Length: 132
Image (cartoon, rainbow, N blue to C red; front, side, top):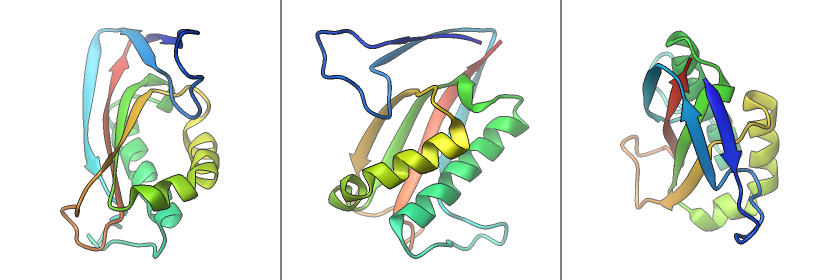
């Protein structure tokens, strides 16, 4: 994939995301929402950062199985049951992201959710990637 991250100077400087991503490639991979489920289908992690790390790992596992890499991510949506808690942990979540997925940030949004499919889940990530 060829990805151009577009961050216009007329917009607030992005931190941990890109305002727009222009992606060209031959395959689009749609990634289902991933929570902090382990291989037995149980939510692991007591805190939002712990669950975020596992949910991101699950998302990246699905992406790699489809032949992609974190740099191929064009869009990720984060659903959080407590946006204030998400904001309070933003720096730590950013470190987790960079350690797991690097610094090629996709276009992103964080959306507050009353609850997720798995009642114990605090966060869920979905997205799509464009592969060469």
